[in-house]
Amino acid sequence: MVKIDFLELAKQAQKIAEDKKGENVIIIDVTGQTAIANYFVIITAVSAPQINAISNEIEKSFKYDFGVPPVRREGSSAQTWKVLDFGGILIHIMHPDVRMRYNLEKIWQAYDNQPAEKVKSEKTANKAPRKTKRSVKKTAKKTSFKKKTGKTTVFKKTAKKK
Image 1 (tube, rainbow, N blue to C red):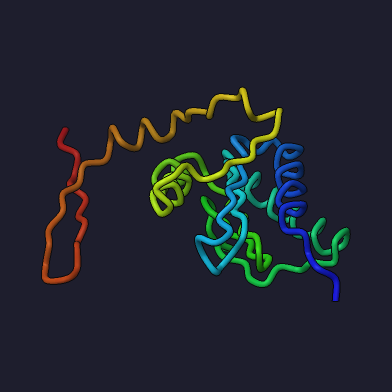
Image 2: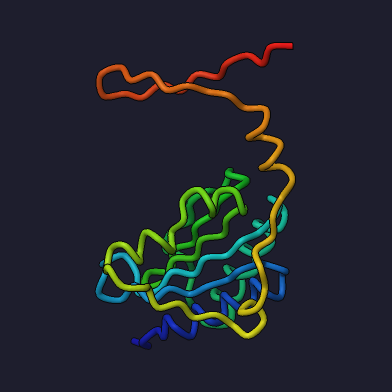
């Protein structure tokens, strides 16, 4: 049985994502912190077609070039976040709003109380994250309030008064 080099796969996923114009691509070494993977690759993609293109290309490359098919795929119908699980590596391809909201990098830093080891390529090391107008418009229009009922939190949208 051939041993899989998950760091090499993570670097390949990073290269593919950058070739497909993925932004702020990082590799986080979570070896010893969780049993689900050794590395997380987190990629920002600004549109649903870009998310699909990156995930399809990574799947195709891993399967045909390395002989590693995905163990599981999540978010097939989602347009803002897809996860590819290859056993020792989890690849998250996220819209900028979703990535900012869930902030996976911070979660894994907090777990260990030390900065998670991040591997950045030379291409993305100096690149600033892209801001979208869409997220600004959404927050300006949306007004909501929380109401706690037992164990469930209910979010209600309030109508905008004219």
